[in-house]
View (spheres, one colour):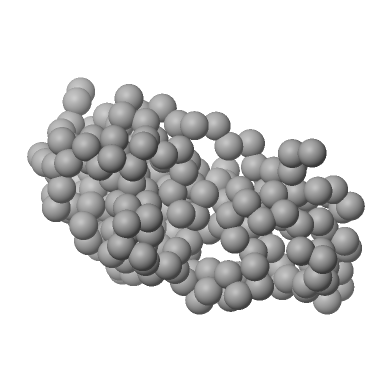
Length: 226
């Protein structure tokens, strides 16, 4: 079963993308409650949408069980993720948007462009492998560049690390981190885990910086090349 994006409503596209992104960086099961919180809808509204998409063969959902994408649903979701992340990259690289400003803009634009536009946009951008937040951009065939990153709060101490990804869920947090210099490719070292205080002490560009655990959990790192 192959589903073309133009055959799906914008709402259906959003649901499929939300299910996919909810599972991208965690193994936590996707539920109607989780989707309701992510999308800002009531549980009853989400339940009805999930039932409809399941009937269309795009989701797999047993009663009271977790929600998963079918093969067709995954293909459609990945295509939407590709659109979204390419548009975010374009807004930053060509229109001067900040990384904290692009998510909502891309949410609107992604529903109004064609597959041809997306492919030409990718070519003009040089087929980038990541978006402004470090999230991998799917290739045209649906495959992904690899990113073997770990959350900063789970990284070891006294090791040279490089920021590879920052969650775009909270624009205020993105602005805060940018003000601290915690941006893509910044190098840092975890000095101490202060769980008793809810703080991660790091060294960044020769400075001591204390990050609250919610901020540290939004940052993903890889080993810095030496």
